[in-house]
Length: 404
Image (tube, rainbow, N blue to C red):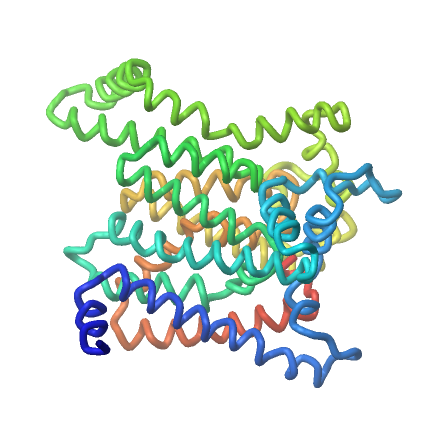
């Protein structure tokens, strides 16, 4: 019996991949759990894993899962700043379990299930996106699994935050787009747009893939770009399936805006309430990056000076990585990555780490960069990245604003 299972395991690539994912996931969660007593040694007051793993916005998601949307607090902050899909899933599980399970535990359960699914399809997408004739498939899967479970900021994916659900939706959108299953890609984008505002921009992933396909078909024509654009427009207009797939991409945010219109009279309430968190007024993107990178945020922001400098430069290097990805012809990944990061940079560097990792495409860029290095160099870099994640977990447990 056991030998039959082993033989099936050896011959089933999907089973081997899933098993590897589960093993690495378990190891990464054991590290997070093991760090709790270590943190308690230096903490003023000892806490459990649920407390350490769920700072800041997790409190808002807990409130949403338990009580739904409410009127603003005296501070002007309101929970309608947070999109509905993730707390709705948590609320549903809470109802099914009769409210006997801690809401934070439910949120963490949802996040962990979502990230496992996300990593599985992230590997399968990476096999399609990266040159498997040049790079080893096993190396690709090992790096992707490592980065998303044990790389810097992977702690987000175990908390009661939207990152896991959003990343899963983004990955499924990219994977289905690559497989030319545009309808499922559109559905994934719709769910993403009900999870975070950036989700509605996933429409560019479908548009980019459709255009690139047309561009490749017109490689022999003199005015290739013009011909490709004309053919692209004609193809989309004449294909009801593609039109519908594109139309449903922002459906999630449209439904939420309709709800807000009836609930508080302002369809854009999720945007307008942001001023309760971000009071500084800086020139979008360029002004934000200059002030952050030079340590001149000062009293204009709630972000500490050192955190602002770190986040500012991380954003700059991430944008450079996305440009390199465009040069290396990862067009959909590069374009979406840039757009996803530009949105928060219109007002602040706060939370940009979450936007970077949540957009997923940064993992494709880093994976290819690591694949271009020698095996020993790659191992050293991955050890350093794992050490950085331990630091991130420590900072997360102590509510450091860098990871906010």
